[in-house]
Amino acid sequence: MRLKTGTRLRSQVCSTEVIVVRPGSGDIDLTVGGHPVIGSKETPADGLDLKPELAGGTLLGKRYTNEANEIELLITKAGVGTLAIGLTPLVLKEAKPLPSSD
Amino acid sequence: MSIGMLLDMTASAFGDRVALGRHDSGITFEHLVRVSTGGATLLKSSGADRVAYLGANSAAFPAALFAAAAAGMPFVPLNYRLSEDQLDALLGELHGPVVICDDAYRNVVARTGLTVYRSEDWLATAALAEPSDPVDVDDDSPAVLLFTSGTTSKPKAVVLRHSNLVSYVLQTVEFGAADEDEAALTSVPPYHIAGVGTVLTNTYAGRRFVYLPNFSADAWLRLVAEEKVTSAMVVPTMLARIVETLDGAQAQAPTLRSIAYGGARMPRPVLEKALEAFPGTGFVNAYGLTETSSTIAVLGPDDHREALASQDPSVQARLASAGRFVPGVEGQIRDPAGRVTDPGEIGELWVRGSQISGEYLGLASVLDPDGWFPTRDRAFLDADGYLFVEGRADDTIIRGGENIAPAEIEDVLIHHPAVKEVAVIGLPDVEWGERLTAVVVPEPQTSPEADDLRAWVRARLRGSRTPDEVVFRDELPYTPTGKLLRRQLVAEIGSSATFERA
Image 1 (spheres, rainbow over the protein chains, first blue to last red):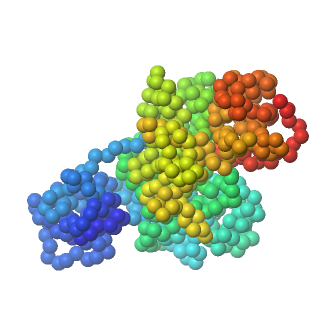
Image 2: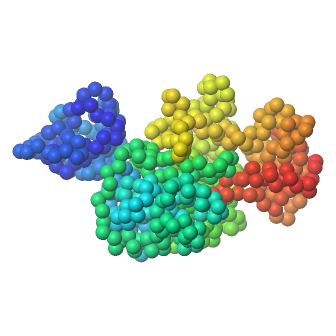
Image 3: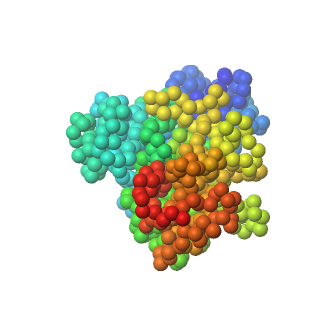
């Protein structure tokens, strides 16, 4: 699917929900737990199971990106599946803290 | 993503943490969600389209802000210091909002026939109301309408959309970054963009916030000690009163890691005294406008330390800068012809980014076709991207055809040992168009001479910058949020015959 900044997506096999911070370009096969994500209001398909090799989990409030750092997703709800493009897991993005300004 | 989701995320991770108020009696993030969803039911049942908030800061303010978000209604904090007529006009512009109001201002709204809730009861009332599921709001719908302070023009309501405010928070704050023992002290009022910003950023960081409704330096220092405050935001006039109260002594504030200041220009002597009074505290200069969803540039603690320690004049000078742009914000300086200037060259600051609104209620967007917002602030960038803000373009004095920024002269005069506060304004003049008038508040027990002050400036700046006259005053007029009321000063002094003509 083509991602769009601000779009909210959910996993079909765990409680993970994400929001698109940077969409990257072109079609992106975004998955959680080995299955494509769907819109946050859509209903998961029946009979899908979490793939054991993609059960690393997602962390609330953390950002994930791909190796090339083209896309960025924020986890708004944590879950047990791994966030990936196809079967390639995304990586945690290091935080660069700013001083508190208000 | 709506601003309400910022709270939901924090409540799901740190629900038991105290969110608001005193460490022993405050309410938790989970309870803040409960009063927001209950409050949303009340606000929706009013039938109004918007929520106005008329009160000083208190725990009711964030609860009302999140309730409005859960109800999908734009939230409008109003300046409770305005006159009844002015407030009537603003309420009229909002077409019949539901109002949450301090008792002190109830008479203002009583006769309008609007639905009114007491802010003093808001937490209790909202906790009893049936919770309603948060309304699914469009990211591009307005979350907060905030009237500008109107020091240079009639107040206009800036439209801050969910996407603007959420972008600001996501780009500048790491989720859950606060330790459990952290607490932020807010003393700016709800109708200031920093008052709104502090609710959102501290909520997302998972940091408790403590309110000081009516600022005094003693109360502020006491609350910092009692509540073990770790970060605080102040406007320059507040910091000036804090260092004045300390009178050279060091503050007893061992927990205070960070003081952020912003909202107006910080006089350098005040900053230097504050750095001495709070030796263990990091200082942060935050620059932003209502139209930019709060902070767009930051001078952090390390920048302050480097500038103080450096032998390099260009690094030392950064202590007077607003630092560098935050992630997600681009800035450029343009000359009057629209050309982007070189480093060091003054012009108007234009900014771009998803947190920038640039839009006012009932008016067309002021963004240019490429999305750039003209701040109306005169500024320059140094070679390393540090932003130096000189002041509002509208404050520029034109004397004999030459553009003069008041700040240039004020920054020199403030260092004179007998000058406590100073404002330079332009008054109508037959010969020069405008003449330079320095309005000076002397330090206690001093009586500076106008000619000495003029000589002080002449020795340091070009001849055209020497004030044509010096007027002495006991105090200068500021808004409660620390902005100098230059137009009021021009009106007062322009119509007064009793000044000392140098």
